[in-house]
Image (cartoon, rainbow, N blue to C red):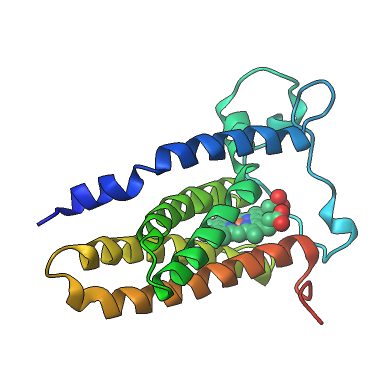
Length: 207
Ligand code: HEM
């Protein structure tokens, strides 16, 4: 009977290639925001076109003040800036995982495990980006913060159920796995919606 460890190893074998692709994507996308002198420039001002969302990244001013040089605050601020890039992975992978399971593709397991890992990374970077507090000045950010955090926690449970349901004798868990995956896909869609609302306004999907 394959153990959870073996299943995890088999599921993650193609992940080395994906990790390489992700690294390339991150490197190239960070260049989008780089100014000519090589230092990260602020992303385009979203507030011009949206609601007046402003957040305190909670790492002090030195992130933007000091040109060059290293500080932990600067590093954490920079990492937080990767949040908008990384969020695409859990959104796409959880939904792709659900679709794959529905059509009976083996890719589902791979997508779901990678979705859980990327959701945890995305949520961690979200906390660095949004600052370390429970409640924000506006309800959209607070809702996004907690739906996003819930998505990460939930997707770990989904990945566990996924691996357990693929083990010999785990068929009984399959129904629970598929149900939790459906909820996970809805949660990540909601997190994505509220994330988009932070940038483009709450009515960004209005018809
Ligand atoms: C899996 C969980 C999460 C997903 C899928 C997600 C998704 C998103 C999306 C789609 C955006 C808009 C990106 C853009 O268009 O530029 C966004 C922005 C944002 N998210 Fe998340 N998010 C997650 C977790 C979190 C958490 C836990 C926090 C904690 C506070 C957070 C804080 C933020 C902040 C502050 C922004 C605005 C970024 C900026 O102004 O550059 N997110 N998120």
